[in-house]
Length: 443
Image (cartoon, rainbow, N blue to C red; front, side):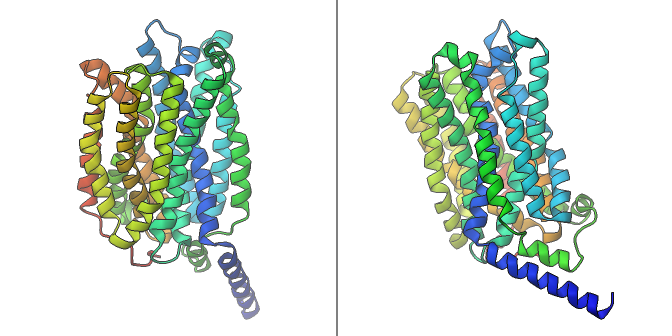
């Protein structure tokens, strides 16, 4: 490269970095990331809160529990494919930029979810209906494998020093708000239409709403430049050629730490936001609409607490809120499942509100930890791979295993044992992680 080409290259790089500095306001970045995370967990949450309604439409069976288990297995399928999406979008994000990967993930998730809303049911096309549902759920899982991990990476790389926890928690609030949005939408639909209409066409409405969310998120992300950390690494031609290989050979410790912490975090989070909803309706026998509204309120309480936890994690460290959160799960989860039996709505709501506190503590302070475990050149791949391998067992199978445990043991509180196990695994993992909240991200 001659001197004129070199000067031109550096001029272009300087222009890119200047543009990034102007356009990457941390508030805009975190909100743009949160919209995509909202969409991801809205999509997954809609299927979770509608699983009871969808089960007889796509998996008719003589036994209601067997039909529900089939629907929950499809819920799990979307998680099983997430590690594949994590590897692909991790490679894309670490090689070609965070922005490109995050635009692709939000488009894929939004379209796959909207298409679920036009699926014919088993009564119309027989066994082809559940097959198509599985394929769309697999597509959702593939794209989701790169979404929240990429968003967390992007936000961490754009946040001011000493405030990664706070701005990262805004993205996390989008995650939990997605579950709340799913519950609110389902509650409105169940309140406004009859049960017959719900099974006929009403269940499709929440899936169709993914399209406007997709357009809003896409608009927000297209207006942002890539992260300064990635641009600097790309400018130095130091992007990893094979990010997954680099993670496995040079950053295995960070990968295992991500997996251990994410196992407990996703298990407790999706148990609180998906399985307990099924539990209240299927076991406690609360009306669907009432259960939907209760869960929506509880999730919104968690959304309000999460930024406070993120702010706190920048001041006292990431570990204290996460430790207190998992200890809370160890105590409150079995207690809540023992107490919630008598269709006492006030008591059920109170126990769920108690669980919102550890839910917010763990989610708000744990997410900012993952990007801090890897250098820039493999940060997207490292976090996405570790997180999504863990979420298969920790999150995707949690509702299924919980339902299965309750059925096999005959004890309605038995699923809390799985939550307690996940909490212990996360606490042990957390003891091996060094707090680097005051240090710059590694390049």
